[in-house]
Image (cartoon, rainbow, N blue to C red; front, side, top):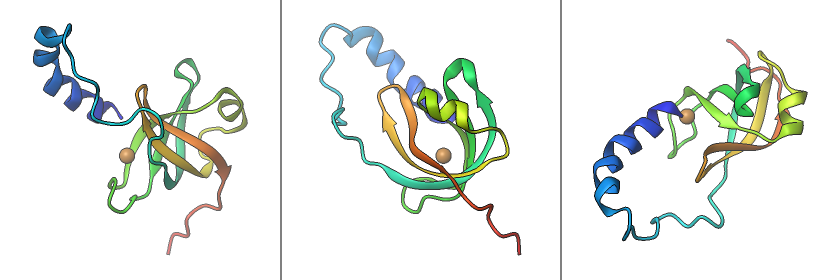
Length: 111
Ligand SMILES: [Cu+2]
């Protein structure tokens, strides 16, 4: 997620500095971000950020396969550990990428 955040910051920072008082509403609707099914493996648990680093498979039309950070809720954070294969629903929230309905998954077959 850092890559995306960096791009957004670079693109918006100069404008935001001058337009802070009259900033238009964000284009994306904050109410109901679209959720996409995801499958991947937790590579590390970032307890201080309430997040997982997840190496996820390609999400067709949305994202290529990569390793990135997802915010998760507290119960989820405590259940899973690095190395766990998971499925979940990812969405882009104002705070960043979020993973919900995280469940254990069988590891992808390596053949
Ligand atoms: Cu990604």
